[in-house]
Image (cartoon, rainbow, N blue to C red; front, side):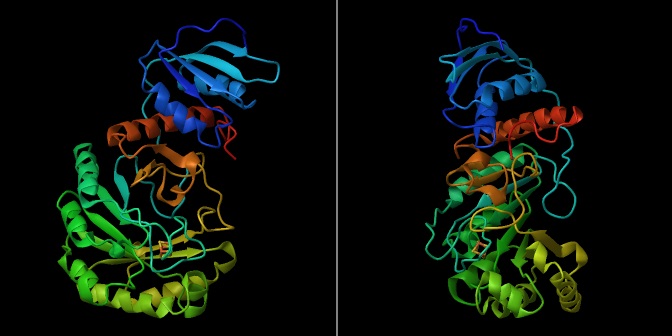
Length: 363
Ligand code: SF4
C-alpha cells in the first residue's frame, strides 16, 4: 500500500483492535453507507490484518483505497477509502444454516420478545434461563418495527426468546403483529397450561399465528438431558394443548451431530402425532450462547435473517450474544439494516466469484 498524506474525511471509524471476524466488517458497512459516493472514510486500526483486508474489501465492494499510513512500523494504521457507487443487487444466498429453502433477505423479521425463560437448555444460543435479565421488547416497539417491515415488503414475523409466553404483553403483542403479517411464535409450550398465559394463547388468531415448539427426541432421555428433567413430557402436553386449540404446530429439534440417530424415532413419533413433514425442522446445535460445541457460525456461513432485540439488530437469531454479528442499534431503521445486509452479501458474492471461501479473516 502507498504511504501518503491523508485526504479530508467525511467520516472516521476507529476500529481499535477489532478485525473483520470480531465485528469490524459490519461496522465498516454501516459507516460507509453513511457517506455519499465520492466522499472519504478514514479507518484507524491497531490490528495488522485489517489494512490488507481493507484492500480486498474496497476492491470487492467497489470502493477505492486512497492512502494508507502506518503511524509506526508495527502500527497503528490509518486507511483512507473513497466510497464508490452503490453496490450491485444482492446475490441469491449461497449457504443455509437451518433446513429448508433459503429465505430471501427482507421476507422474514425475527423479534426477540424477551430473554428470560423457564428453562436453561445446555445449547441455548440466547443464554436464556430463569435468571437471565428479561430485556423485554415493548409491544409498541415490536409493532413499530413490524409496521416498518411490512411497508418494506416483509412477508412474515417470528417471535422468539427466551420464552415468549413469559412476556406479560405477549397476547396483545402477537395479536397486533398478526394484524400486519403472519406470525410464528417459538415456544417450549410448558407455560400456557392455565391462567393469564393460557388466556394470551387463546386470544391469538389461529389463521394468522402458528406455534413452533421445541421437541428434541421421541423419548425423554435426550430431550431432558439437553433441556431439563421433565421437560419432554411437558412439551408433549403443550403440543397437544396448542393443537386442541386449533393452532398449526411446527416441531423444531436441535441436535448435536452425535445424536443424529435420534431423528428416525422422532420422525416416527411425529408421524403418529400427525405433524406434517413440512412442519418439522431438524437443526444442528450452533456454537453460540451456552453451547460449548456445535456448528461454528459467522456472517460468512450463516444465511442472514434480520433480528431485533432490545439491544440492537443482528445478522441472525442464533447469534444475538455475539458482538461480531450485530448490525446496529435497535434505533437503526429497518431499511438501513436491510441495506447493510445486502451490501455485505454483495461483497461476499464478489469474493465467492473469485473463488475465495472467506472475504476476510472471519474464522
Ligand atoms: S433454548 Fe429456548 S427453551 Fe431453552 S433456555 Fe433457550 S430460550 Fe429457553
